[in-house]
Image (cartoon, rainbow, N blue to C red):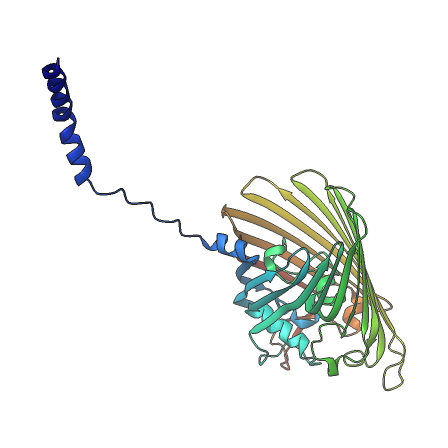
Amino acid sequence: MRNTTRAITAAVIVAIAPRLLLAADAPAATPPAPAVPGLSDLLTSWGLTTSGEFAASYYHSNGYPGSTWRGFDQDHDSLQLDEAGLQVGYQPKSGIGGFVDVITGTDAQILNENESVKKGGFSSDAGYVDVRQAYLQYATGPLTIIAGKYVTMAGAEVINPSQNTNFSRSLLFWELEPLDHTGIRATYAVTDTVSVSVGVNNGWNYTDLSESGSKTGEFNATWTPNKIVSVAVTGYFGKDNVLFDGQELSLVDIVGTYNVTSALTLILNADFKQTSGNGDAGDDLTTHINGFAGYANYAISDAFRVSVRGEYVSYLNAGHAIEGTVTLGYTPVKNFEVRAELRYDKLSDGLVNSGAFYVRANAGAEDEIDANNNTEFALQGVYKFSLP
């Protein structure tokens, strides 16, 4: 019996011995390398958001609209870098944060021109880099307070081209509305559908405290009962001691948005602007400018869309201006759009007789040709991104 047991034990050892030896000689398994976090993961862990845009264009006009009527497309035949921008924000729902928005290009030059408070037209010596927004933020519950420089609350269009549906900006955007402000603004979410903002600023488009004169108060109330309808009412009231010779300057702006379907959106923007009182020279410089702009944006497909804008601006006791724009947008890949735009402007005889006009050719020369209308064609490429 012992011999049988020994024989069985020996057979088992012989059978498993090679496997034990091989296992002993085999190297230990290498643990997988830790995954390297991507940029989006790092930004999320730090609580940062990053976005940016790049827009370049070519436009051709049958005249020179100039800075009187257009801020960002003033020339006759031009290739330009409209804007390259980068935005970085740390904006927690509770506590202290901040936001910085830096741009370069023609848009930056225009903003610098306005912020420098020069009474002349477009200046070639204005810088090509601008801090469009830079502010500290404090949030607690339904209350958010920002202090620094920030864009205006008025209007249906914005400075950032990637957030507009047309290449050119409306007459309301340039003629009646401010661009940016420096001051302090508080926003309070009264309910899930109603928010109210109030603030005090250095005026319209002024960064330097010493140049702005008296302060300008701002107010905004926005009602968004659902995803279909929203209405925003904004007001600016104050005295301008620089560009308007110490007059009271006020604006009431109304923007209504109606999402008819997932493909069709209608927007109405109404502005009522007034300067009142005597200037520094004692002259009564009271003016009233009222404007209305309507927008229809329709998504033909995932790749194509069309945007139509029409507007009417009335200058009390002087005349009126009308403008119509059609823009076709094509998105061949995600986050990139090509826009083709056709625009027509027309001034009434009253405005022309008062000295307002477009220049056909030879601006400033003795043989300058003036006209009451302007036609423009433009092509623009817009790329945008956001992280995370």
